Amino acid sequence: MNLLEIKGISKIYGNVKALQNVDLEVKRGEWLAVMGPSGSGKTTMMNIIGCMDKPTEGAVILDGKDISKESARSLTATRREKIGLIFQQFHLIHYLTAVENIMVAQYYHSMPDEDEALRALDRVGLLERAKHLPSQLSGGEQQRVCIARALINYPMLILADEPTGNLDEANEGIVMDLFRQLHEEGSTIVVVTHDPEVAEEAQRTVVLEHGRVARIAYNVIAPPIIL
Image 1 (cartoon, rainbow, N blue to C red):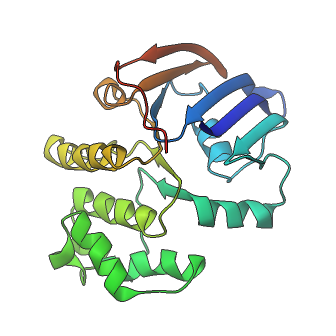
Image 2 (spheres, one colour):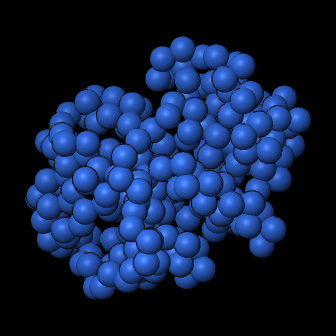
């Protein structure tokens, strides 16, 4: 059963065709990697899947609903309710502590709950850093706060943009262990990455070139988890 279906989407900026007639399906419980050189359309596709932009043409079906024609307000609500976003640049609020950054995500979704936010930090191994500001955390710790923030509202889709791009090898391993655990629990994950080793962890890798799907590689034999 598909959680996400992309049907013939194109995105045009002036004379630039960032995406051209892209088709893609993501099953519930699947881990998908998206790769491609700079300018291939990865970020554009991530923004469209993540309800931060709309395609010029085509349809995007998320959880059975076509979101491609929704208003900006409706897209914001869909993103808040259904998608957990993890960014390479972290985007933590610098004057809030780790636990407060997570509670901000709760606030925009429903109601802040510090105990629940603390449990989310504990899950990513950062309970003892709950009262630290982002400037007091390493890059790897900040990324784990981002993961906890993305998970706090129990999203049906986790969308990660270069989640290990700014991390050293040790912290990359910690973050990838968290992604493996999430996948084993049945989470649907889409990871945009330049790193072949990160992509190999996924069940499929979609390679974009010049705004088109150039090829799809199946990385593992095991089928995706269907919930």
